[in-house]
Length: 397
Image 1 (cartoon, rainbow, N blue to C red):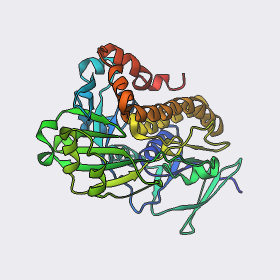
Image 2 (cartoon, rainbow, N blue to C red; image 1 turned 60 degrees about the vertical axis):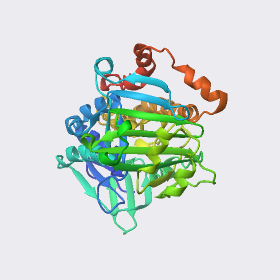
Image 3 (spheres, rainbow, N blue to C red; image 1 turned 30 degrees about the vertical axis):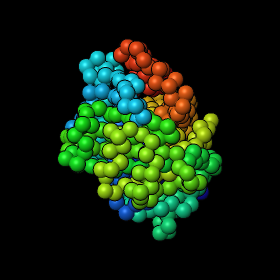
């Protein structure tokens, strides 16, 4: 394959990770061809949570002010028992939290966080977008990368980064591993404030944990909407995918919980249904002039609320690695992987374990409920330091 004659890196995927990656490459002095399979640039879905580490990453990328203007800042993180309605644990996200982690905890619509990053990318003239481009072939050698889409169009660059999500075509090429389907199903919906239960309109990211299930709710968009997420262990053999949900199905899985949290599933008139999956962490994401970023690199279950946060951290770390190696892409990619693989693997494994704790039943539920009894806020913060204490200054340490 002939070497590319320019300074262009191919970024496959235009989600949050892809946009963050494009910004990072731009800031490191590269041109970017961003290739997205959807007809339009944008995000679907509902709400996501943003830990302090996400704000540190967005500030480093230059899109922090936009995201901050669109976010809702929570006062607390609350875990409730969905069986007896008791408080399992409560973490203050107020002044002392912000002082400790140098940033707030917030919730935001996925489309709003994507837009915040996308708007910053749009200010860069050397980032070019290509939509309606589903990748069909990928060739990488020691001189560059070449991809061809389903329309027959070919793109060339000096390197390639796969940011194409949990079903990454680039990962299939670089790693070739399989995914893991635990049988957990997630239903997501957004409800207007006036239709949301008045006794649950808390300015908090709240989770109700129950046997083989849990429910999450928090405000979005200035409190005018509430995000509702419910998860259960399916009775069926699940396959990884997304489709319209059935109100009757979701209601059938929550008959064993208390009335107060159960009212959440009666409010939405429509649901989206995700049968979720992750992948086992791997020791490398690429070789030569290719690597992965975001969900393509480390797809994870949602139980740590860190998917988007990790993608944004990835982008900043990639930029810093490029600076350290003065634009040498191959050396920078390997340094980036060296620093990111252990951290993101820890989040993948932690998410699996949190899912087990959230869904505990019987005596295990009682043990879980005692884990955090009497714990001070400082002890909570100490336990979260490894996750929320990330910063650009530490990303290559």
